[in-house]
Image 1 (cartoon, rainbow, N blue to C red):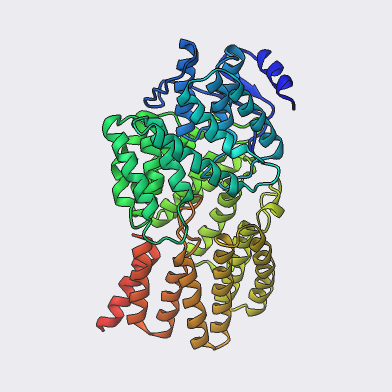
Image 2 (cartoon, rainbow, N blue to C red; image 1 turned 135 degrees about the vertical axis):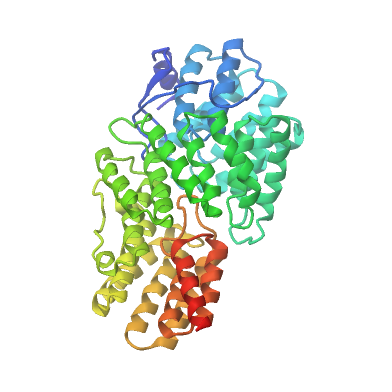
Length: 513
């Protein structure tokens, strides 16, 4: 679509705040009719631009939506205001910023890349202040040579340029917030000290001190400290998020990333109940928002850890009324993992071995081998624990194939996790065949791999922690001291997990006998 054509469409759009959008940018993010309700409840943003007063107000709202990662709503908003004030360069910058999601595991379409490149080029051609030009250049860095650069390369270019904005304008709150976000995005996955995230957290703390209702300061602080090591530093920010954005689904869900890390199950349950309810207000034309099922995944995890399985089952039944759901990576992950958790957490091995594959059918599972692997991991583990070695081996064959496919798309993160799943199933097959020493060694390797990689924000935790399974195997072997150590090691990463707490208690009793 040419820029001229796009602007023509924009000029003919309705001037209400309910905007129909026919060309949105990401998988599961097309053809949306989204209502932005209560625009004032987004926190405080004062993003100064050299445009009209009304465009200034729109920019404040739009940047607030960006900080909340409500990209679809922000895209609609900037669409609307470009039509009303086509000479405001920063409206085009804002529109371009809605088309890529630095922390999200989604894929930007080529059409959106072309559109973003054209829009940011338009921004460079309009009058803008020196500060605005720095912002525009930062966004332009993402789209430069998009035809040949990978998304990872484009994100790195944006992060470097965003740092330049911050260095030039260190007192600019939003420049600081976006720079902190870029530091979180670029933080090495293998850094067990989370040094870059801590650096970002300190920057955000300065914003929070001067403007405690800034959405970026709160939201990005939660992302910065979303690890078992650092989560305690984000409790205040987590509890403040709903106060500035009570109607934003992501603002109601995001704090539970911290609550999960700390094993605060009552908070996980209450906040995700609210988030799921709020998400239903933002449908994606004919489908339920992915934010809904993402919150449900965390909610069910909370119920399972609170030993309230009846409520977990009731929520699963409620989900049936909300299909189809946006077919995005987070939705596919949740829809796969929820039934897997229900069986595995309750040690219902027979049911786990019969978990349905490629469900729901409206999702293109070819895109998500790392997620489909969860199904075959569950089936294989369930079969092995149930004593059906042949069925376990058949599922392991498929898991091996999915591992090979995952290697091509995520060799450093998802592939190692799928490899750990393969080794877990292999270990329990070995155990059932009487090769107990070999099984222990295989399960140790799986646990070491899994523990070396921090959990992805898409999930409240490992489908079933390998370290916890290792402890279970020690218990079966009668090695209670090692079992207790393994359970405690698992709890250091996953505080207050029900099965690890129960197992540790049982191991302690056996040791004392």
